[in-house]
Image 1 (spheres, rainbow over the protein chains, first blue to last red):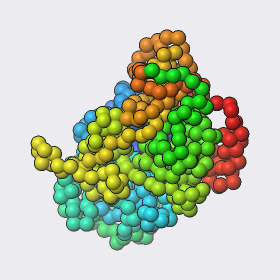
Image 2 (image 1 turned 180 degrees about the vertical axis):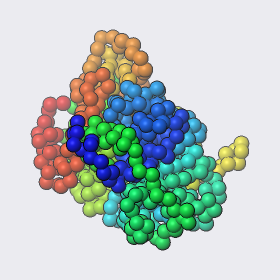
Image 3 (image 1 turned 30 degrees about the vertical axis):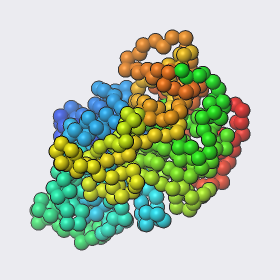
Image 4 (image 1 turned 120 degrees about the horizontal axis):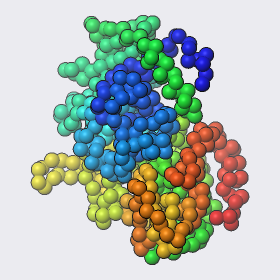
Length: 262
Length: 273
């Protein structure tokens, strides 16, 4: 283990993001976890304040307790530590669609002011500038869970006025809110970024900046957003990670050393 | 009853140019060796079906086997893009690739309908997503005759051929699988013709906690292919080669390095299967 890195006192912005996302998960809740940053944050929560958090991965793994961070949603580490392994139709039908999951935890390539997510394509669908991986389980996670948590780094490239493709629906599409679309669940209740925390306006569903991480100016968050971002009158500053949160996160990331990013 | 044959024979018998072929395995037990044999035998114009195209379809697309891809998530898990897939979609290299795109829940239920010999399956969760438009003509709506609720209907998937990899088979071609089971049973039961490659063929399939058996009488061919899922994993046999998944990012990023890899690791191994 890299001791010099562990003892480094300063917290970087990705660490603020991951810790803030982990804090959003409650003990004893059931969480459907996407791979990458969501998985890192969920596993951090499980090591801190939420030891009874139930982790579900779309490969059919229920109640995973990985000792190291998985690289994929179907790593053997998830399978051997699980309470149960079920088939892919079963995880989507009997568990996700049947509303047995409290929190869906997603990443995003792009999102708009209503927390609609694009992970499919940048540019025209038939002649894309960038072809992204696509939907995977996300559209049903976004609609089948009690609520949704999104973790994503904030920039003008990512936080855009207009999505080229809505892969997973957030709070609203045009005139139709979730109720009008017939969707169960509260949808995205929090977007945690490397700059701060955004939450939907309860009336309109539009994301509002509710917290900035220490050292981040509001102007910087506005600059990193491709629409005119609303700022809460009760804007908070994210609480500093504790030494325990910081060290647990660093140890977790160092143990999962094959991870190429995040 | 499944015939136990060599991989070369099985692929030659089963797969014809233009077929719709599903190689399934969800992170675990991906039938990589079978995919490589399809590349070696030079099959063309295939409709490749798979929830998570992964490295194996990146390789088959780059090698020019595919005309159409039916899928729900096309990335290198935890690493990033599938560069050969992207090059085909963005730049039509080595040629154009038609896409039919679904969600995981949609694909999984399409296989369930196919395995059940029903025309379609019913799912929720498409409202508000552009996916309702891009799985055409295989995504539509249906009104429940009991409640009047409007639901999403996904058409049954009936591949010409399905291929899976499992841990073991006996000499009668009954195959045993444990660990993450993914969508393989549904894919095999949805297809017209099937192949299961296995780590080993044994005299007797000893019971194992959590293991399931697919009877040989629903399968066409079984082949013994040790290591046939590498660099994915086979629980009880070998671990996932995560480093290889990371290395694939640079191997596949450029056409030259990909072609070099393809020649050295697939095409030059003619007759070894």
